[in-house]
Image (tube, rainbow, N blue to C red; front, side, top):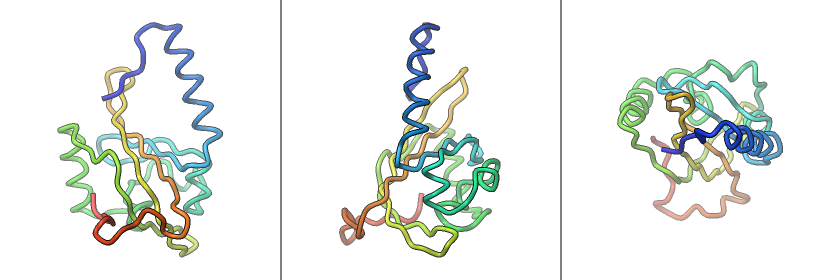
Length: 142
């Protein structure tokens, strides 16, 4: 698990760097809590899925990856894995935007910690023309 630095001056510097990446990245980023609730998204993710931040924050992550607000089996698996700090660091998937556009993405995930509370940072990197997807490489489940 990646933790934010303990030294206040180092933390301020690293927080500023992360904030710059968050704001300027062309890759969609999302932070979720242990229940699967979305607590933060960057502008690139909003553009990728065609929803405003206000329509994403506070909802479950399944609305983005699976188009379903409440997918009980997926949420249960997510919550169990989160509690055990087990994640799949990199995978590929096909997601649907709310404009009904299908998007192939590489998904990278890392557990982060702030004030002793764990969160999951998920980065969605669009794959042009389904590059990187090989038969058997597509995982649409968590």
